[in-house]
Image (cartoon, rainbow, N blue to C red; front, side, top):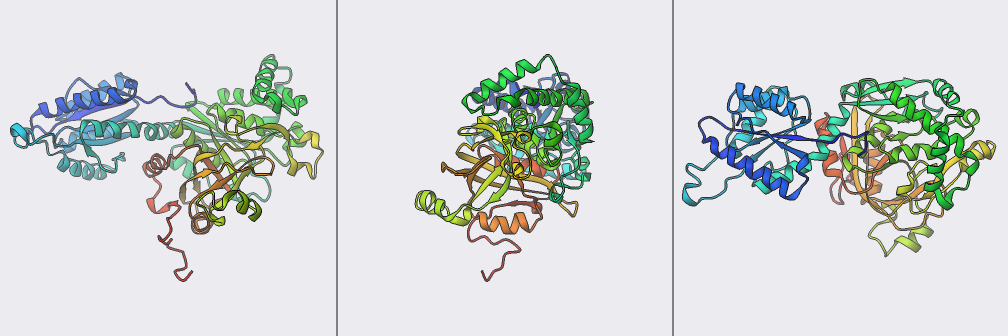
Length: 497
C-alpha cells in the first residue's frame, strides 16, 4: 500500500429517535453492512455494535467505540427519524471526515408503513439543519435516502472523498526556493493552505543543494541506479546522469523523513530552473516523475498549489497523476488529418498538455530520458539531462486545479476529457487533450478566474468525488468552475457571440 496515502476505515453508527422502534435502526444497519460487504471491501467499514444512538450518553459511547476500533471516518446512518441533537453532536466531536445517509421505507405490506415506518426522509432535513447550527461540515450524498444496497453505494463513493479530506488534514507541503523569474502565476498566497489545515515548509534551494552534496557516495545509490535502468529499459539515453539522479532522489526521500514532523503525508514543490541545472548538473524531471509514481507528488517551478492539486488527485484516484502546462494549440494539419471526422471535437476543444519531462513512465505510451531542449537553447546540453519524454497514454482524464488566486480567494476547476490516441510530433511529456467546449472553458474559467498555466491530471473521470472534496474543504460552489455544455452560458460570456 502507498505509505503516503491513508487507508480509510469508516465507522457506521446507526441512530434512532426514542419514540420510534429501535429495531428499525438495528435491522437496517445490519442490512446496510451486509450489503456493503457483499459488494465492496469489508475492511472499508466498521459496524459500531455497542449501541443505537438515541441520546447524548449513547453518542459518547459510540464515539469511544469507533475511535477504539481505529475508525478515521464516520457514517451516521438514520435507520429512522433520528435524534437530531445526539447524531449531530456525534459528527461534531468526531475528528475526521463524516457523512450522513438515511434508510428508505421498505414495504407497505404487513403494516410496514405503520409500525415499520421510519420517517428518515424527514429526519435528514432536521439533521442537515442541526449540522448547520453547529457549523459542522459533513458529506451528504446527492440523494441521501435509499435502500441498504443504495446506501452501501453511497458509502463506497464516500471512501475516496474521505481519503482526500483526511489526507489534507494531515498533509505538509515542502517547497524549495522562490518561484522562477516571470512565473508570478505560481507565486500564490499561502494563507488558504492554512485555511485548508495544510502545513507548508518553505526552504531555500541552497539548503537542498547542501543536502544533495552530503549524499555524495551514498551506499544506496547503486541500487537506485539499477531500479532506474530497469524502468527506462531502451529509453535510457543518458546513462551517464543516473548516478546524480539517484543521489538527488535519495536526498528528497531523506528530506521528507526528516522534515515531515507531526504530519503523516507529504508532497513537494520543487525548484528546477534557472540555476538548478548549472549547480546540480542536471534537471530533476525524471526523479520528480518517479516520486509522483510512488504517491509523493512533486510539482516543478515551485508550484505549491500545483503540488497540492496533484496530491488531492493522487488520494482520490489511488493512482499516479501529473502536472502539465496548458501549453499550445493543436496545429490544423494534425487536427485535419488525425482528429476531424474521427473524434467529435472542434479545433477549439483540443490543446496540448506539456511539461519538460515530469510525467511518470507508467503514464507514457513510450519514454526516453533525454535533455531539456528549451533549456539547452541557452545552456550546455550536458547540464540539462534528466527529462523523461514521451506521448501521454490515451484515455479518459480529469483536468483540475485547486488554487488561491491573486485576490487570495480559494478557487477550483474540474473538467472531464480525454487524451487522444494521436501522435504529438513534439518533445517533452506531452499529449493531445480534448475537453468538450474547451475554448469557452479556457476563456471564461481559466482566464476569467485568474488560474495559472499549470493544470493537474487524473487518469480517469473523477469529477464527482473531486467536486465533493472541494465543497467539503470550503471552496464556495460558485468558485468551482467546470466546462459548461454547449448552450449553457457562463456569467461573463458575451450573449451576442
